[in-house]
Image (cartoon, rainbow, N blue to C red; front, top):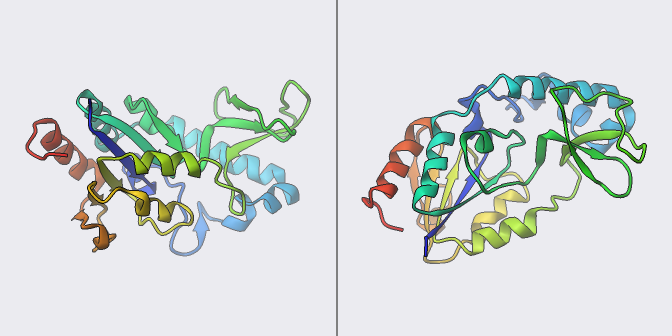
Length: 233
């Protein structure tokens, strides 16, 4: 039976692919206040602005490619049962070939009806506009978990982490609620690596091995060592 490795990935994972969809230190998100483009109130107040904001993010995504870190994670599936729990809304993990990706905060390439069913639909191209409706006639909105909305995938993410033999945290400070609590569900025996150029002693209570480098550099090296059996799980 393959050992189970869980990846917890964040914005730093995709930054090397040119994706800037995270909140910057100045409180702005792509030059917009988060409150104006990523909350239910923003959608009610100015849906056109919200749609255009995510259209631009989607256009940027379609022009981006997986980086060496994404590609390395896909290779890890050769010998391990790999599940990725990501805070990112891009699909670069899937584009790289990873087969099991759980998106905590939604997916940029999908739309969701504003009707009761909350049915989800793929977006053809990069534009989702006002007037684009589901088969039942309800306006479509980005399939994104906005600030103030429930993170419905959390129970599934917790289950994945609980069943891990090892956890690799990459490109995230793990300080955003509720994702920041996930590592607490890792079994006592699980090996943990933290990969982030700004990492310090994050989760030292779990005896994590900290690698203060970018994902595109550290992941290929770590994963090759795992595949070669140089590091055991």
